[in-house]
Length: 276
Ligand code: PLP
Image (cartoon, rainbow, N blue to C red; front, side):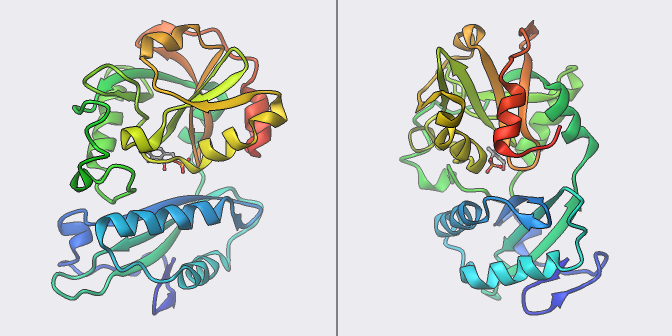
């Protein structure tokens, strides 16, 4: 682990004060970056998104160079043969201090994530409680920001697990598919790879989905963004939940309706550079 202003510290070193609003209120931001061959993948888009999240929260994120240096410190002793996740965290800091707490933590890739990548996921739809267009004009709802307040995201996943599924596809109250609690929805329909438009919906702009759609031509596909209702996904050739660490996890069932395995999953995984 590495802490801004302190450098590398052992993983069990306390780095947060008890009055840090990152823990008191979940007031802060983070990024999870895939570590492959000992280096962060898509680091630039992650850092750019972190800066956008900081702007939305009015948070004094340190400059890009400081974050790059911090990540380098955390990665210094990392075995390049091990796939991992780098979390960059910036809280608002101790109450009234005005100084953010910034640190970088590395963890090895988990077996549950590998299972999702290899075997796909059973997904249930669940309402997020907003109409699709609610968040963009309401900046206090922090649409598009990757904040530390992930309790709702984790509760959604526990709810899915409690109902025999692996993951959730959040929907709007007016019936559109949004995103998963830790992944972006991507589907293949008649030669086009689609995803949900972030600007129009307030979902998080996924770095993995963006890269995949920007390179869809390598697989002979077009790419586009559109709103979709979960029922319309039934006729898609393939549906995936795509994210930085797990990579593409194929949706193998949606609300109990089993989907035929998509022939394209391996190609997506290869293109994105994720091992299976
Ligand atoms: N949506 C949410 C809510 C997420 O937490 C994540 C994961 O970080 C994603 C989408 C996928 O984004 P990325 O591909 O940048 O990991």
